[in-house]
Amino acid sequence: MSRFGRRKNEKVQLPGRNLEEYITIHDPDLKAKYHTKEKIPMQVFHDAYFEGKIDFNDDVLDVMEQRHDWSKLVFTPELFKYVFFNLIPDVIRHTETQDEEQVRDHYDRGDDFYEWFLGPRMIYTSGIVTDITREETLEELQDNKLTIVCEKLDLKPEDHLLDIGCGWGTLAAFAAKNYGCKVTGVTLAEKQTAFGNERIAKNGCDPSRAKILCTDFRFTPGGRGAYTKIVSLEMAEHVGIRRYQSFLRQVYDLLDDDGIFVFQVAGIRPHWQYEDLIWGLFMNKYVFPGADASCSLGWVVSQLEKAGFEVKNIDVLGVHYSATIYRWYKNWVSNKEKVLEHYGERWYRIWVFFLAYATIISRNGGASVFQFTLHKNLNAYPRILGVPNHASIHVKPRVQIQPVD
Image (cartoon, rainbow, N blue to C red; front, top):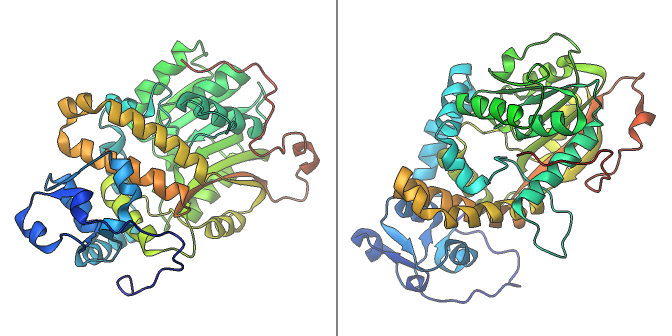
């Protein structure tokens, strides 16, 4: 079907150039097979590119924008092999040990690796655009997002906020610094834990009220209703489809009956195209191993409601993610020499391809990110008190915001 399916329309006319105008194939076998108008399957291309067998002739993002003119978005034997022998077993297992190994291998690679594209905020989740009349900086996008999340949570000094999958602790430090609340962050990555606690201290926060713990979310401290506010930004993808409901039930139990849960998760469209599927398998293999719970908006809503949550608000942030990743891409390219020196050519190639393609995929709707404001679906929940901060992404902060250093 991926080979014979027709385009939905012909509104976009392809340039019709030869493959050699976009990429240079060094491998003799590949060169004999793919040339002039004979397009190369995307999976074959990116694997060969990572191995140095193919090069882009121009800026990676610019060439990827023209991918339909030189590549075929078709399923290959290698993709079938990966689905049956890697993806499906991972989905079925999703053990605690597997999660720990995958997360630490990914996020403990080195803080410098991530800083070279995330910038000083060290936030690996989508920012939010609030002004389309100019190009906001990456730091502005992330500060916008942090402010919006904290306002949706309606944070107060008496709150205890739990940040599940807190990354490098920037949100924890931001919430403690600006809203004065108690914060506990949890992450599986040891380097993130150390970085986050140091960041909290550098920003003048009381370490007895704000801290990052290196632990599996399954062992989050506290009993039923221990936290008045809970946030989880783009961590649940790693939980996996198999354990998704048990994760949400644990969040439900940890949340106070009058509490608020802000939940952000990436996903794909339900009426997917083959490019979406090929993209998702690339991401699972090379970028986010084990993150199989990147599902559609409808599926996530059904899981949340099944766990006992009521949806107050949903913001679909795919285009904001594209804007964020575009800035990550520019940072990564600008730090190319540093990456090559410390991590080598292969890691640079994987990430420049990932960031370029992700900029496109999240812009065209193939992948998106959803931000939910939730509370328990209880009769006695004081819903009227949530009216003042029911403002989607256009919030007016109640405090004078100070960026995290």
